[in-house]
Image (tube, rainbow, N blue to C red; front, side, top):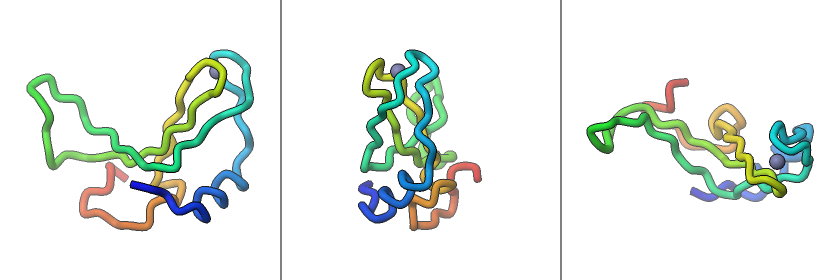
Length: 86
Ligand SMILES: [Zn+2]
């Protein structure tokens, strides 16, 4: 799912640029798309459980990746019946 450019620009503008805890770099690439994290189940994909909508932010130097919860960050406007355990 795409994030509106306005919401993404506003989010970035209001954040401090973190230092990468792996390499010390301070340049990052933020995705313009929302992905989802599902609970791992060794028996296979389980549908209907909690889903965390996340936006990856990747260190441009080493690839260390942070996940921002799109609901908490206000990057997702839609409401879901099971909204990621929040
Ligand atoms: Zn890094």
